[in-house]
Length: 359
Figure 1: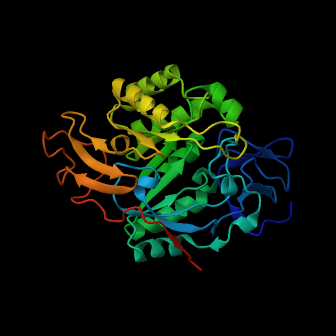
Figure 2 (figure 1 turned 180 degrees about the horizontal axis):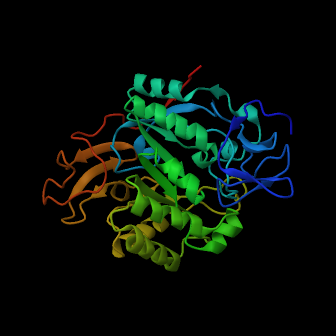
């Protein structure tokens, strides 16, 4: 490998006795010789150290509705400035963003922007938050953290859309700077993780328990349901029972529809009935806020009071309708708390998607 055009120093690595360098950022623990890249493509061994080769370089910027992350209980209706880089530390055969997350081509990173520039642009665009998304921010750990610090100085919230595949020490540092997260719980079967993502389930569960027990990060879960792979009643039952027992009933769960992509074009799209079935199982097991996604389903996309059943936040795709929350996030009918972070009034961004050129 040629000398990286951007070789930003990193912290989480150590030298081995055989002369290689081990990356300690995620459970993969890639062991690299001089000039080699990790599986993520973007962390490499350069001059005997692990460097990040994508610092300050993005695959593009776009203002989205926060519900697209998806986050339904984090300042609903507000806008979020979204961006990612390239690469990923998972190798999901069903990746829905493979053109960026699987890219080994640095010319994918057409937009250059410092953390401070991103924060200023988010403020100029009146975005409530900035999201690290499209590919997993775990692998651009240093860039994401510096951007989060710059955003907080501007009063901008930060959002991580992640698979949660990160080692304990860097996990603490990363989430210290994050306000909200959507974590992909791709399956509740380690066989699925190993076969279709090249990873393992337990580190993701460890991340979720860490978020619940040791942080103030607001987080929601997403499971992409793939026909014949992770959509059985038994797996959905086991997963949702675990969530309630270990994370509590108030963590929202999103069940989203798969479409054939990347290396799984032989599987059919997910029927909407599968998503409805998953939502029904989750609600029956005590999950208070269960949603369907990637399909037109107003009932499954809306927020309902877990106590009296009143419609609290009506959603039609990313457009909000009826709003029955008090200023402090309670049902205006029965007074039950709706878990999440809310303002007195919902945002008015709607379903718009606004590409942004920071050049």
